[in-house]
Every structure is written in C-alpha cells, then in structure tokens.
Image (cartoon, rainbow, N blue to C red; front, side, top):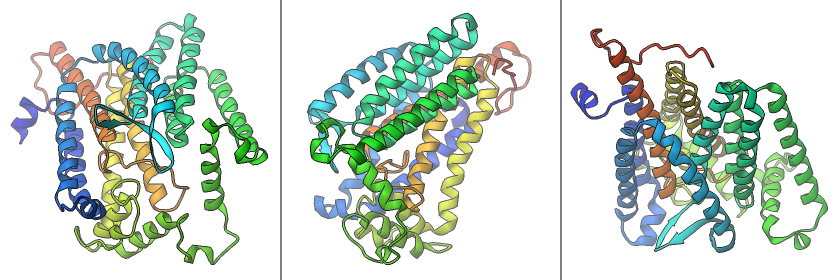
Length: 407
C-alpha cells in the first residue's frame, strides 16, 4: 500500500485515504438508499452501477488532475469561467426542470448542472485575483473590483434558481478574501451590501403578490415559504402531521431516530422506501439510520480531516495562490457538507444541497473529484519542490514545512 501511494498516488496520503473512504461509503449507502430508483428501473443493481460509473470516472479524473501543475489550472479556470457564464445564461431559458427548479442542461442526452462548473471556476479565479491583490498592493482596488464583478455576475445567475448554492459560493469567496487579508473596509462593504440585499429581497417577496412577480424571480417565494415553515413553532401539533410540504423533514427525522447509537446496519433501512430524495439530499439520514450515531460522527470526522489537512497544506505553500486555492476548495466541500447534514437533522430549511461525493449525482461527483485532484496536485508539488531544494535529506511521507509569511 505504501509503495502504491508513493509510486502512483502522489500528494498527501491522508487526503487520498479520506477520498477513497468517502467513495467506498458512497457506494455502500447508494446501494441501500436507491431502493425507489431500483423499483422504477425494475433493476436492483442499475442505479448503483450508474453511481459506481460516475465514481470511477471521478477517481480517474482526480488522478489525472493531481498530475497537472497548478499554474495551468490557474489559466484554464478563466476559460471555465467564461463557459460557465454562457451555460448559466442558457439554462435560464432552456434549462431542464426537476423539483420546480430549472438547474440542469441536457445536451446530447447528457444532463449536467452548469452551476457546479461555475463554482469550481469562480473559486480558482478568485484565488488568482486574491493572490494578485497580495502581490500588487497598489492595484488592490482593481483586482478587488474584478473579483466582485465576477462574483455578482455568477452568483446572480445561479441565484435565480438556486439560492443556497449562490449563498454558499459567496460565503466561500468572502472567507477566502478574509484569509487572504483583503482590507476590512472592502469586506465590510461586501457584508453590508449582502445584508441589505437580503432584506430588500425578503421585503419584496412579502409585499408583491406572486402572480405579479416576474417569472424569473418566482423561485423566491419557495425559499421564503421554506424559511417561514421551518421557523414557525406556534403549531405544536403540525410536526406530527405528515404532508407533502414536510414529508422530507419528517421522514428524515424518523430515519435518524431509528438509527440510535449503532444503527440497523447497512442494507436494513426502512425509511429509504418513504423518504423522498433518500439517495440525494437526505442520504445523511439514511447513513445515520444504518450506521447509527457512531457512523454519522465518523462521516463528519472524515470531512473535518479534509479541512484540517487543507489548513496544513495552505501553511506549507510557498506562494499565495495555491494556499488560497486549497482553502477555497476545501471550504466549498465542507460547508456544503454541513449544510446538507443540517438539513437532514432539521437544523435549517431544505436547500437541495447534495452530500459531496456521497449523494447521487453525476456533475456533482465529477466536480468534487476535481476539487480533490487539485488539492492533491498542490500537495504533490509541495513535496517535489521540497525534494528539489533538499535532495540529500531523507523525506518522510508528510508535508514539508515552508512558512508562508504573506498570509
């Protein structure tokens, strides 16, 4: 195993182990949680085979991406950003709708979410612009302005159909700027504008009747209804009544309650047959039902290890761009993870965010694998640079310590 990692799977060994464990867990839980899909397909194995196919493709993509120097990733991201904007505009007019949201494009029989490519491109470009601000303090306003224009454009296009994704992306880039030590006067202005915009948007939804609202903004009524339904605690009996509006939340809670400490073991879930989106948005409920509280905590720990290792990697980078990029990519995975888990445990309203690398989905799995590939590629370069600088020093399978004083 050690020879395999050193010869083929270069980069941080801990991250490779986390990545592989998440893929294995994904296959196990998808096989269990996809019972309704198996019934529709008249095949018990077809849904999980599709999932394994995407995971296999994702692993191969991660392997090839982790061999690409990040300086090329930096260049390619601008092309990806341009393509993303075009696709996001196109999806507003010709998007394929599921669950009352037009988030998908179907080209040549292949269905994908342009917002996933947009998230990846924005994070990389934002890391590049932030690094330029750090390296060219006299032009910081120009690069900050460009970052804001990019962020407002992409988040604005995503926002029309997917509020949670736009909000998470904005939050991740904001944290990247904070870690990159962008002046607080700029960050304060960003935060103030965001808060004011949310209040204005909420007021507009409450004041304007739905039938008078332009079609492009009608999705906002769904968001407000979910927030109000989640926060309404006046009717104590409503939580015991299952209807179309609360079906996901209630069955998700039942699944978690059935899990107890040790769970009912993989393959023995009952709520998978009643819980809508058990294989997607609410797969964490099925994980807890089958693996119990212990299994649920172990999954959380896997993602926390990713975040911890990302912090270590960032402090060992020799320049600003890879450090900020690693932080941004890991934050996107981890924040999306805990949004998904919070929905499954009824801490926040339903958002439609999948559990990265575990939930069913083609685009999400492939893009998440690219996240891992880029992070692993940066750790590979750190090791190679360390070997070049100290060729006669014995190297351990750990990250070298190269302080980044500019962060």
